[in-house]
Amino acid sequence: MLRYLTFLCISWLTVSVSLGQDQIQYMSLETCLIYAKENNLNLKNARFDEYIAASSVKEVTALGMPQIKASADINYFVELPTQILPGFFNSQQGVFVQDGQPFLATLIDPETMAPIEGDPIEAQFGFPWQSTVGISAQQLIADGTFFLGLQAAKSYVDLAKRNTARTQEQLSYDVTKAYYSALMAQEQLKLLDANLNRLEKLYNETKVLNETGFVEKIDVDRLEITYTNLSLEREKIKRFASLGRDLLKFQMGMPIGTEIALTEQVSQLIDEPELNPISEFSPTKRAEYDLISSQITLENYNYRRFKVGYLPSLYAFGSYQYQAQRNEFNLFSTDEKWFPISVVGLQLNVPIFDGLAGYQRMQQSQIKIKQLENQRILFEQAATLEARKASSDLWNAYNNVQAYKRNVELAQKVYNVSQIKYKEGVGSSLELNNAETTLQEVEANYLSAVFEYLLAQTDLRKALGEFTVVEPASLNE
Image (tube, helix red, strand yellow):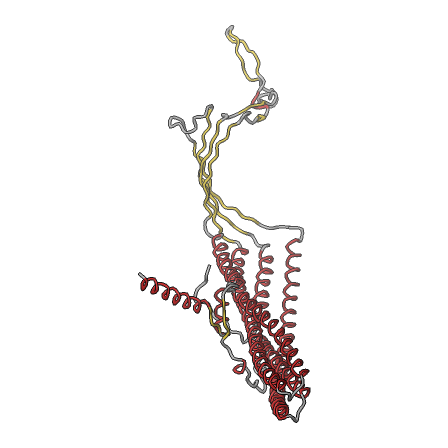
């Protein structure tokens, strides 16, 4: 039994360690982008808009199909409608005698030889219980707005797809920036850990030198203060790094509670830019350009729809009904009759005058088209300027990285020399402390320059429209 319990404990510990390792997801920038394009809710909503647009095409197409409906009603007239019958239904009557027998006869106007009309008659027809059941159908034959609407609906699908592409492009941009931000916070932690280790080693050595009488106690105190401040800075950066990973998970659509680790190395991300990265740049590569172009196409359809709205439209229709009238509620009795009513026909609608409302709509549509065309021109100019600025910023950032990298190497050499001099007793603790502070500053400046370079590189990719669209393997509902 003891061996069995021991086996269970070991197995439980093994599984627990294994599950703890599996809970951490190791993410590169590429895997973050793929995960985001499969799980980001904004992108899912954009794809839902595509489905809605596709469904709207089918909806418009359905308007050109026969529209068939059935109807049924039961009515009880508490008071039957009163009809006024003309006077000729109530001709005046007179009493005549023939063969000694009186009889009624219609009075004739001797001039017109027509019956003399009496007073109009108030009459009520039918029965209080009435019911009608039937089926009716309508079929579009000719309507210019329908066919234009069908073409516009298909263009609306295209607009939805381009909007999805724009959303994906922006998502890739946001995820990339969030990834670099989290990665740089991670690198700052590594740098601070290295500085703390170096400072701790120096502190221990100085403490020994103080105990042997080679350095003063104030030198130990200075190093302790520096170590404490650096430790506080590390705690702050640690919280910032955790927040940066949470922001990255939010951008990807990943649960915030998921543990992730970034696999990229900063040293692998610094490449010398091309001499002229915008030589083949064209604003037409940007998703925004396609989006505006689709809006122009749709508005042109809108203008043509208003224009053909002045043309006649023709519909065919037909209905077949059965009607019953009863004095009592026995509408469904098989002993009583139902009377058929059927009709077929054509309906022609010819617009004549709408108070110039359609003309005003056409004018508004034309102005919107001009506005969108101006917007496209403005975008072309702004995108070109954005690409030029991004290219310039990238080169400036790259030069800064190289300069700060050289400064780190020089500061490291100065620190090494100062440390040797201090240990040999020919250098002061103040000189060593200054060298340590300078090294920390230039290392921090180097990381900041690297971050600026990565952001500039991301901005240039966005400006050039280089964020590729990767279709997800599946759409998680």
